[in-house]
View 1 (cartoon, rainbow, N blue to C red):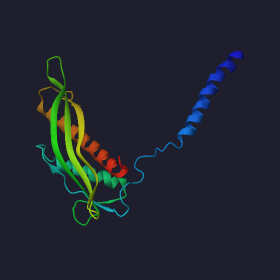
View 2 (view 1 turned 60 degrees about the vertical axis):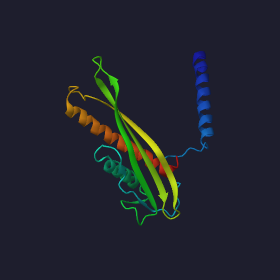
View 3 (view 1 turned 90 degrees about the horizontal axis):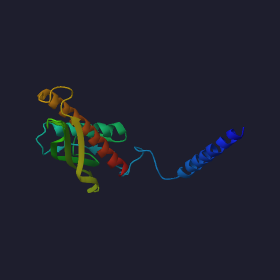
View 4 (view 1 turned 60 degrees about the horizontal axis):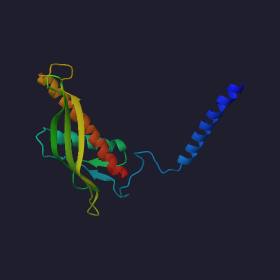
Length: 186
């Protein structure tokens, strides 16, 4: 019986500490992401024309633009238009570079992983006030992938399939990050 009471003492102390911690952190200022916006209230229509692609990656601008539009639409608060006229705010983007570099090697000195790095310049402009609301002139995203995908290291089909999957993932991450940064003022 003495052991049971002794074991309950530390447990109750930990339980009390956690309770005090929960009460103290209730007013810490954290809020759920995606709730609200720092944009002016009169902004209802955001124009997202096709981004500019300064790289040699075919159709990257279309993929990124579609992902950003879909992410805004998913938030449900704004009407997203592909035009740059008749809107309250205009989001413009320019993909400035894409690079592919080996990230790791096999014992035979063949690349086993590649790193895909993309850099872009993004700006959201309030058309009515003619001022920049948010911008990042050098936002960078990186995605790694396996070079072979389970097939021979010299199989070009495996390489290009993994490259496409990496572009898809980096585009999704790009859209989520950009839209969250704009709407949540990060």
